[in-house]
Image (cartoon, rainbow, N blue to C red; front, side):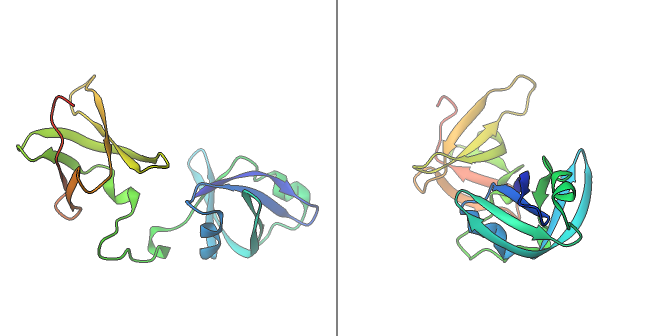
Length: 163
């Protein structure tokens, strides 16, 4: 969801680079997980606000600039249980990762390895299964994405093997 980029002020606040669509989206979560190299710690958010392109936050137990500086570089995550349920026609990007992608001819294109935003539309990165397999970039738009069956582990697309 973000990373700590620097201490902010002298009273234990941190500056965060959010990885969310809108900077303020991170403010919806009162408990953050901070981690680096696989070690995570939970911290309650005492106060937070959008500050330009960043978020500044005061976390429980962080009282001064030195403690805040010790968090620099840590990643910020939130528990999946804290996410609101998506609407019926929505899905979280994380739920697309690992889904098998099959075209209308029944050919398996691969599995979704990641998703990114281009500004015009979101893009699925679909990796072929075999070692050294190619990656395809599929626009996440209605003419291409015909059906997403997260429970069944599959996305049906109108996309040729030779694209």
